[in-house]
Structures are given as C-alpha cells and as structure tokens.
Length: 169
Image 1 (spheres, one colour):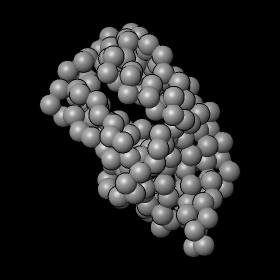
Image 2 (image 1 turned 180 degrees about the horizontal axis):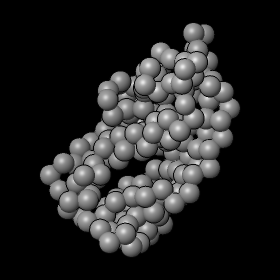
Image 3 (image 1 turned 180 degrees about the vertical axis):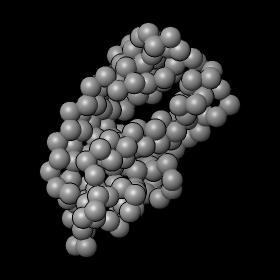
Image 4 (image 1 turned 90 degrees about the vertical axis):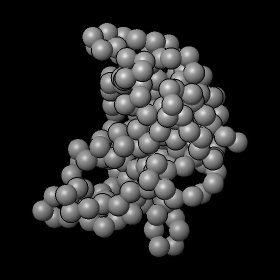
C-alpha cells in the first residue's frame, strides 16, 4: 500500500510495512514508527531523559509522519498558509529512558475533523530479547490554524489521508 498527499512539489510516497529504517521512519499498517537514540543532550545529570524531551520526541515523530505522507510542515505553511498547534497533551510517564537507549515513537491517528486531529503516541524501547517496553504514552489533540492564529480547515487532501489512517487504526 502507498500513502500519498499532493501538496505543492514536495509530495512523496512512503511504502507501508517496508521495515526500512530511514530518518523519516516508516508505516506499519496505519501506525507510523520513528526510531531515535537518546543523546547526552536529552538527559539530566543522572543520565535519564528529562521529562520534557519526550514531548520533543513526539513532535519529531508527528512531523516525520506528515513528511512520509508528503505534507511537510514548511510546505503547508508556505503554500496553504496553515500550521498545527498542540491544543491538548495528556502524558503518562511509565518508565525512564537512559543515555544511549535506542527508542522508537509510534504514532496512530485516532480522529480527524475539519480543523483538528487526535493522535495517540507511545515512546518505547526494544529490549535485548526483542520485547518492547512502553516508556511514555501521549494523547494529543492538534488544531489547524492560519497565519493569524485562527482556526483553519485542514486541506481536503490532508484531511482525507489522515482520515484513512484514523479509519485503519
């Protein structure tokens, strides 16, 4: 299956279920997966990831999910005059990540409306035995806004592509 959004000249497709590691991640069904590594800059003095950095990890994952769909944020801003803002974020910290851990962020779109969307995200670590350890759960509500910071409708093609992901989740 291929997912594709046509936004300007930057549209691209992302093979789903390919398992290929790249800087934008990949899709496993309707779930976007972004691998990342914990660097020194992400941790506190004890080598544990500082709690606010999980929000950064989640933001990167949502950005790369949109890039895999062919809808880079910069293009949406320039060509469509829209951007996304976090309206609500419910975060549950389950276990800490540590310096040098290899993590991944899974993003699942749950609901798409005219000017907003909801997504569930998890940050997890793959253990040596192959098991996944869930570290953080995030429930996000994003609002689409125009250049004057007023609510704006998602472009139809973006809404439809995200809607397909939500329907599959």
